[in-house]
Length: 216
Image 1 (cartoon, rainbow, N blue to C red):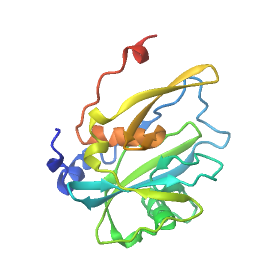
Image 2 (image 1 turned 90 degrees about the vertical axis):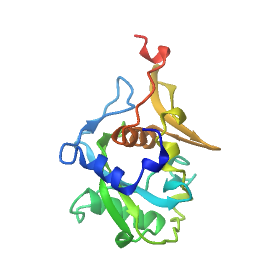
Image 3 (image 1 turned 120 degrees about the horizontal axis):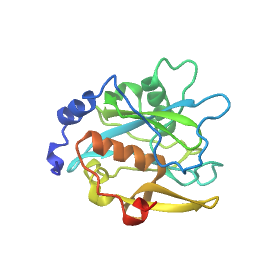
Protein backbone atom coordinates (compact mmCIF):
# COMPACT_ATOMS: atom_id res chain seq x y z
CA UNK A 1 0.00 0.00 0.00
CA UNK A 2 1.83 3.04 -1.23
CA UNK A 3 -0.91 5.27 -2.57
CA UNK A 4 -1.52 8.34 -0.40
CA UNK A 5 -5.11 8.49 -1.63
CA UNK A 6 -5.88 5.29 0.27
CA UNK A 7 -5.07 7.02 3.58
CA UNK A 8 -8.70 8.01 4.02
CA UNK A 9 -10.53 8.41 7.31
CA UNK A 10 -12.37 5.13 6.77
CA UNK A 11 -9.16 3.27 5.93
CA UNK A 12 -7.25 4.63 8.93
CA UNK A 13 -10.13 3.90 11.30
CA UNK A 14 -10.46 0.35 10.02
CA UNK A 15 -6.75 -0.38 10.37
CA UNK A 16 -6.66 1.01 13.90
CA UNK A 17 -9.72 -1.03 14.84
CA UNK A 18 -8.11 -4.30 13.76
CA UNK A 19 -6.21 -4.56 17.05
CA UNK A 20 -8.49 -2.51 19.28
CA UNK A 21 -8.49 -4.04 22.75
CA UNK A 22 -5.32 -6.00 21.95
CA UNK A 23 -2.70 -3.26 22.19
CA UNK A 24 0.95 -4.28 22.40
CA UNK A 25 3.44 -2.61 24.66
CA UNK A 26 6.36 -1.61 22.46
CA UNK A 27 9.69 -0.94 24.23
CA UNK A 28 11.29 0.44 21.08
CA UNK A 29 14.59 2.22 20.60
CA UNK A 30 16.09 1.43 23.99
CA UNK A 31 19.78 0.82 24.60
CA UNK A 32 20.54 -2.77 25.66
CA UNK A 33 21.25 -1.79 29.28
CA UNK A 34 18.39 0.72 29.62
CA UNK A 35 16.48 0.90 32.89
CA UNK A 36 12.84 1.36 31.95
CA UNK A 37 11.28 0.55 35.32
CA UNK A 38 11.72 3.42 37.78
CA UNK A 39 11.17 2.72 41.52
CA UNK A 40 7.50 3.64 41.39
CA UNK A 41 6.83 1.78 38.14
CA UNK A 42 6.23 3.17 34.67
CA UNK A 43 4.60 6.60 34.54
CA UNK A 44 1.37 6.69 32.51
CA UNK A 45 1.27 9.23 29.69
CA UNK A 46 -0.51 9.85 26.40
CA UNK A 47 0.04 11.84 23.24
CA UNK A 48 -2.38 12.99 20.59
CA UNK A 49 -1.62 12.23 16.95
CA UNK A 50 -3.75 14.97 15.37
CA UNK A 51 -4.59 14.68 11.68
CA UNK A 52 -5.74 17.71 9.68
CA UNK A 53 -6.88 17.97 6.08
CA UNK A 54 -3.98 19.02 3.85
CA UNK A 55 -3.73 19.74 0.12
CA UNK A 56 -2.87 16.10 -0.66
CA UNK A 57 -4.47 14.15 2.16
CA UNK A 58 -3.95 14.33 5.88
CA UNK A 59 -1.16 16.22 7.61
CA UNK A 60 0.10 15.42 11.12
CA UNK A 61 0.33 18.16 13.74
CA UNK A 62 3.67 18.04 15.56
CA UNK A 63 5.33 20.43 17.98
CA UNK A 64 8.94 21.52 18.30
CA UNK A 65 9.75 21.80 21.97
CA UNK A 66 11.10 25.07 23.34
CA UNK A 67 14.88 25.37 23.47
CA UNK A 68 15.00 26.31 27.16
CA UNK A 69 13.34 23.13 28.47
CA UNK A 70 15.48 20.90 30.66
CA UNK A 71 14.39 17.70 28.88
CA UNK A 72 14.19 17.05 25.14
CA UNK A 73 14.75 20.72 24.30
CA UNK A 74 14.22 21.49 20.63
CA UNK A 75 12.99 17.99 19.79
CA UNK A 76 9.93 17.32 17.65
CA UNK A 77 7.07 15.54 19.38
CA UNK A 78 3.34 14.99 19.50
CA UNK A 79 1.37 17.15 21.92
CA UNK A 80 1.01 15.16 25.11
CA UNK A 81 2.29 14.42 28.57
CA UNK A 82 1.81 12.48 31.77
CA UNK A 83 -1.62 11.44 32.96
CA UNK A 84 -3.20 13.36 35.83
CA UNK A 85 -5.47 11.84 38.51
CA UNK A 86 -8.50 13.62 37.04
CA UNK A 87 -7.97 12.03 33.60
CA UNK A 88 -10.37 9.07 33.24
CA UNK A 89 -8.40 7.49 30.39
CA UNK A 90 -5.52 8.09 27.92
CA UNK A 91 -7.86 9.85 25.50
CA UNK A 92 -8.66 12.46 28.13
CA UNK A 93 -4.95 12.93 28.84
CA UNK A 94 -4.08 13.35 25.17
CA UNK A 95 -6.90 15.84 24.54
CA UNK A 96 -6.13 17.87 27.67
CA UNK A 97 -2.44 18.11 26.82
CA UNK A 98 -3.16 19.09 23.21
CA UNK A 99 -5.44 21.88 24.38
CA UNK A 100 -2.77 23.12 26.79
CA UNK A 101 0.11 22.95 24.30
CA UNK A 102 -1.44 24.05 20.99
CA UNK A 103 -4.91 25.38 21.93
CA UNK A 104 -6.68 22.51 20.18
CA UNK A 105 -10.21 22.34 21.64
CA UNK A 106 -11.16 18.88 22.90
CA UNK A 107 -14.50 19.03 21.08
CA UNK A 108 -12.75 19.68 17.75
CA UNK A 109 -11.18 16.20 17.66
CA UNK A 110 -12.83 12.97 16.47
CA UNK A 111 -10.96 10.02 17.96
CA UNK A 112 -10.20 7.25 15.46
CA UNK A 113 -8.30 4.83 17.69
CA UNK A 114 -5.01 4.16 19.40
CA UNK A 115 -1.60 2.92 18.38
CA UNK A 116 0.42 0.46 20.44
CA UNK A 117 1.58 1.67 23.83
CA UNK A 118 5.18 2.80 23.85
CA UNK A 119 7.74 2.48 26.64
CA UNK A 120 10.39 5.20 26.66
CA UNK A 121 13.88 4.98 28.05
CA UNK A 122 12.91 7.58 30.65
CA UNK A 123 10.29 5.32 32.20
CA UNK A 124 7.03 6.48 30.60
CA UNK A 125 4.30 4.21 29.24
CA UNK A 126 2.84 6.33 26.45
CA UNK A 127 -0.48 5.68 24.70
CA UNK A 128 -0.65 7.40 21.27
CA UNK A 129 -4.23 8.48 20.48
CA UNK A 130 -5.07 9.16 16.83
CA UNK A 131 -7.71 11.77 16.05
CA UNK A 132 -8.93 13.94 13.18
CA UNK A 133 -9.38 17.67 13.71
CA UNK A 134 -13.01 17.95 12.63
CA UNK A 135 -13.31 21.72 12.10
CA UNK A 136 -11.06 24.68 11.30
CA UNK A 137 -8.87 25.50 14.28
CA UNK A 138 -6.17 28.12 14.83
CA UNK A 139 -3.31 26.38 16.59
CA UNK A 140 -1.58 28.58 19.16
CA UNK A 141 1.62 27.21 20.71
CA UNK A 142 2.09 27.49 24.46
CA UNK A 143 5.08 29.88 24.54
CA UNK A 144 6.67 28.11 27.52
CA UNK A 145 6.61 24.59 26.05
CA UNK A 146 6.30 24.90 22.27
CA UNK A 147 8.62 26.81 19.94
CA UNK A 148 6.69 26.07 16.74
CA UNK A 149 4.04 23.86 15.18
CA UNK A 150 4.79 21.65 12.19
CA UNK A 151 2.36 19.89 9.83
CA UNK A 152 4.19 17.33 7.67
CA UNK A 153 2.09 15.06 5.43
CA UNK A 154 0.96 11.74 6.91
CA UNK A 155 1.86 10.03 3.63
CA UNK A 156 5.45 11.26 3.91
CA UNK A 157 5.83 10.30 7.57
CA UNK A 158 4.51 6.77 7.06
CA UNK A 159 6.38 6.02 3.82
CA UNK A 160 9.21 3.57 4.66
CA UNK A 161 11.37 5.23 1.98
CA UNK A 162 11.55 8.38 4.12
CA UNK A 163 12.76 6.77 7.34
CA UNK A 164 16.13 5.49 8.37
CA UNK A 165 17.91 3.92 11.32
CA UNK A 166 20.47 6.16 12.97
CA UNK A 167 22.59 5.56 16.03
CA UNK A 168 24.37 7.26 18.87
CA UNK A 169 26.93 5.92 21.31
CA UNK A 170 25.68 6.27 24.88
CA UNK A 171 27.79 5.14 27.83
CA UNK A 172 29.89 2.98 25.55
CA UNK A 173 26.88 1.23 23.98
CA UNK A 174 25.53 1.83 20.50
CA UNK A 175 21.87 2.79 20.46
CA UNK A 176 19.88 2.52 17.23
CA UNK A 177 16.70 4.51 16.73
CA UNK A 178 14.25 5.46 14.01
CA UNK A 179 14.65 8.84 12.33
CA UNK A 180 12.52 10.65 9.75
CA UNK A 181 14.21 13.73 8.25
CA UNK A 182 11.68 16.20 6.85
CA UNK A 183 13.19 19.24 5.17
CA UNK A 184 15.36 20.97 7.74
CA UNK A 185 13.69 19.06 10.58
CA UNK A 186 14.82 15.79 12.17
CA UNK A 187 12.15 13.61 13.77
CA UNK A 188 13.65 10.84 15.88
CA UNK A 189 13.38 8.77 19.04
CA UNK A 190 9.97 8.05 20.54
CA UNK A 191 8.09 10.28 18.08
CA UNK A 192 9.64 8.54 15.06
CA UNK A 193 9.09 5.16 16.71
CA UNK A 194 5.38 5.88 17.15
CA UNK A 195 5.15 7.01 13.53
CA UNK A 196 6.79 3.75 12.44
CA UNK A 197 4.16 1.88 14.46
CA UNK A 198 1.47 3.98 12.77
CA UNK A 199 2.94 3.01 9.39
CA UNK A 200 2.87 -0.65 10.40
CA UNK A 201 -0.77 -0.37 11.43
CA UNK A 202 -1.52 1.18 8.03
CA UNK A 203 0.14 -1.77 6.30
CA UNK A 204 3.25 0.09 5.20
CA UNK A 205 6.11 -2.39 5.43
CA UNK A 206 9.51 -1.41 6.81
CA UNK A 207 12.83 -1.80 4.96
CA UNK A 208 15.18 -4.54 6.17
CA UNK A 209 17.67 -3.62 8.91
CA UNK A 210 21.10 -2.40 7.91
CA UNK A 211 24.01 -4.87 7.94
CA UNK A 212 25.65 -2.91 10.74
CA UNK A 213 22.53 -3.10 12.92
CA UNK A 214 21.97 -6.78 12.21
CA UNK A 215 25.54 -7.72 13.11
CA UNK A 216 25.98 -9.29 16.58
